[in-house]
Amino acid sequence: MVTVTDMIDGVLIRSECLQATVDELEDKIIGLYFASASCPRSQRFTPILVQTYNEIISKDKFEIILVSLDNDEESFHGYFFTMSWLAIPHSNETARHGLKSLYSVQETPHLIILSKEGDVMNSIGHFLVAGFGSLAYPFTKDTIKELKDEEEAQKKNQTLRTILATPS
Image (cartoon, rainbow, N blue to C red):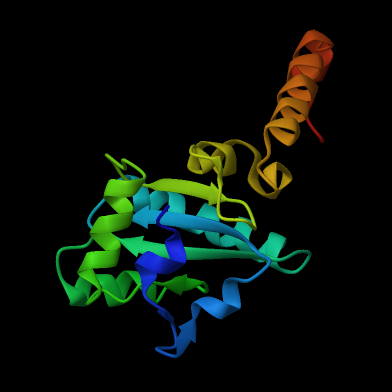
């Protein structure tokens, strides 16, 4: 079985243009973030993901890798500069397109969550982050079920007062 680290071929970069290696991913939950600077949905979602990432990274072993679907290096660098995580270099077209194909990514943004062992834990990470933020971490089925059950219970216990009340 081909793994993400096999496809990446050892070299990643940080937004400061520093090189990193796949060794830095050991024992971490990984988010593969498929996005494009030209995609309005990616533009809206990225700040939410940045906030979520910053909340999680301070507590646990988690890393995101940008898999850019930009057509040119200039767009990639301009967009990646807004992120604090890792990326596959734009020049590594084989890895970028190979991962897109491996995970059947059809649109952006798309966030695939991989376990520490490299197995897909969740293929709809972008919806989970948009809906629950860092509370969704570690993005397991049990965590998501718990969050959805809690949300449903809150909806059932709503009153007109709790819906219309304001802090003022």
